[in-house]
Structures are given as structure tokens and as C-alpha cells.
Image 1 (cartoon, rainbow, N blue to C red):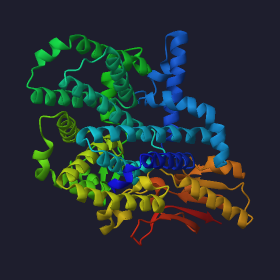
Image 2: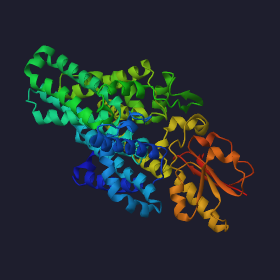
Image 3: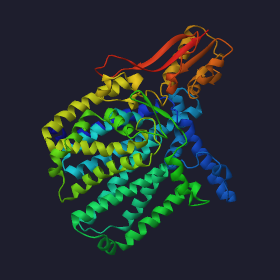
Image 4: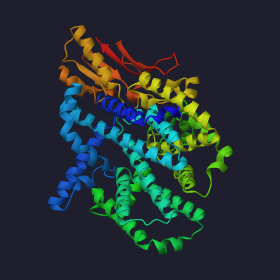
Length: 528
């Protein structure tokens, strides 16, 4: 495989094709379960910002239930949404507001694409090997689980992307200190701003400060220097960074403007987020406010590619090759310790997470790098062979699963009953195809479109343009007194009973490569 990269244009061609396909898929997707809520968070905050500058108060924001949800991502996405939402609405033949919701998907994918660049830079720093860096980055970008989330996840993918960016910048600064290079003040300003931006997407971003500390501890141990000596030689930067960090956090989070101590309430609120959601995990309902420690390891085992799991197992055999007194080992050790320490902290503090690993997606690139680096140092030819096989497999999986790549599970999961043991379409992307089939059935059977459609709250943006007018939630279907009507169930509703005395008109499914059984993500019904 390495000979392919002797053509300097090949990586550029791959990235161009990848970006164009990924961008299109992101803006032609369904409307996910978080879209309304994320937009509401921004609307309330934006009204609060305007009110604060006009009157010095913003009572609506202070009394808003999700006032501690960070809105930094919206500073990037909203201008794009404002300019392009009508174009995207026309492309998908849905309402303007539906177009406004979906248009942010491109920005999400763009950030993930950029994160791939920083993944490449980290790979290069750890191994100083071009072939490894390119192959590992292609694996990262094509990994169906992340690629799927990159099409719509407005919290976890931007957070993951900025975590990677800040990880690289922090370790590059540490490397410069190792080489006794002077750290410029503009580096510190950028570093403080980007760190605060991460924290302002999700307040759990504060934990990256622990990763920074770990990096410096590793530096001190390798460099054989002391904290006091470091502070003495970098006093201005040591003082400047926390001041700028606090300033930028304050500026980027409107809820702090009336009381900066709200940051403490934000930490407490988000660590025990009130949605006590049940995540189906190996057939068991595991509730987000009372998770067993096994939750993380079960999902990591079934979500990580086998090539990564293999790499992790090899650590004892390659430890001496990787751990040395060079800057590359600072990168590796920092990622390794940070990953395990953050997981341990989450378990000890019983932090509320749900929907598989979505709230700890930012840890996946770390464990990706660790596993791939281990395999590379164990045997370069083995790494190349497994990487090529996995890349081909990922391409096939992305085709067969689209648009449900975010539900991806590795081959170990295929030995279980996937639908009974794991979450399926908890984001509701299936609403686009389900609404399309409902419209086709109505037109082919000359059914009056004045009848109600029972489902989630999102498909109406696809159906209003088709002249449907009545929309209710699936939970109301048992109370339906007037027939006929349409009903569709997806999201976690897939575990509810089917509507009574109704005809199944469509079953939305996908199948894994080399796996015969189809996975159902949603069904549409006609109830006459």
C-alpha cells in the first residue's frame, strides 16, 4: 500500500472525493431527534443576548430548563444556516424550517473533515511515518460509526473535532518546550480561545485541562525538570493562559454574564443531566443516571473496529519500542493516560451518558491512535495489510448501511441478536424514507392527504410539501378515534407495540456486509 502514496496527488484526490460525498450525504439526510432542541437552545440564548444588551437582563434564559447547554457550535453553524437553508430546503423538497435544521449538517461534517487533518498531524508526530499517518487517517475518516455521526450530530462531533484540535496544539506546545523553543504570545491566545470554545460546546470540555496537566507531567519526567523551573522560565504564559481562558469562557457563554459562578451549576447540572434515558446494552436497559461500569467497556468492545482492539491487546509487546525519551512518546503517553483516566473519572463520578458512546465520542480518536500505533510498532507489514483490508471493509459498510452508519457495530456484535441487544435508530434519521413511503402509498392508492400522520415530530417537514396537514406523535396513536390515518414508528418507539388493526406498508431496513439478517430501523402503517 505504501507505494500508492508515492503519488503525491492521491491523498488529495481521496480527500476531495471524500469531502464532496460526505458533504452531500450530510445535507440529504433525515431530521434527527436533537434538531429541534438544539435550535431551541440557540433561539433562547440569542434572545437572551439581545435582551441583555438592551436591558441588562435576560430572565427567559435564566429560567430556561437547558440554560447550561453550551451554544458555541451555533456561532459557526447559524450564519451558514441563515444563508443556505432555502437552497437545502429546495434540494430536499421540505419546509424552510426543515431546511434550516438540516443545513447545519454541512458544518458538522466540515468540522469532522478538519478533525481528520489534526488526526493526521498527531499520527505523524507519534510515528514520523507518512505511510502510517495516511493509512490511519483514512481509517479514521471512513470509520462508519464516526462518519455516520459526522452527518448530523450537532454536539458530539463538533466537540470531538475541537478536542482533537486542542490536543494537537497543546502537545505541539509541549514539544516546543521540550526542544526549548520560545512559545509566542499569539500561540497562547489561540490556544486559550480554542480551549474555551471546546468548553463552550459542552462544559465537560473542562476535563481537557486534566489532559494538559498530564502532558506537562510527562514532559517534566522526560525532560528531568521541575514545575518551579518551568514556571520561572514561562511565567508570562503561565499567567496569561488561565486569564484568557476564563475571559473567553465568560464571553462565549451568555448564561455566565449575570453570574460567572453559574459555571459551577453548569458542571453539576450537565454531569447528572435530568434525562434518565435507558440505553439497550447487551439486552439490558442501562439507565443514564445509574450506569454500571461495564457500560463503557461493553460499548467500546462492540463499537471499536477489530483492528483497534487487536492493537490495544498488543501494548505489552510494543511498550519498549514506543516509550522513550523523545517528543513522540509525550504524545503517545499523554493520550494513553488521558483516555483511561477520563473513563475512570466518569465511572467514579457516575456521569450521566446515554445513546451508546455518543457523549464520549471525543475519546474514540485517542483510542484509535493508541491501537493503530501499537499495531504499527508490532509489525509494519501486518499494519499495512490489516489497514487495507479494513479500509475496503469500511467502504463496503458505508455503502450498505447508509444513512445509518452511526449505528455501526463490529463483527463481534453479529454473533448476537443485534435488534434485541443494542440500540438501533435512536436519532430518527429514518423519518425521511418513512415519510417518502407514506406519500407514495397515499398517491398510489388515491388516499386523501387530509388524514393524520402519527409519528415523530420531524417528518412533517417532508410531508407538508406533499400536502399533508395533520401530524401527531406516535404515543397518541392508541387514542386515535378517526380513521383512516398513517402511523410510523422509529427512534426508541421501535420497542413499542405496533398500531392496532393496521396494514404494514413499509419496513425500513439495512444490512451489514457479510451479514444476511436485515436490521429494522422503522416501520410505516396504514390504518383504515
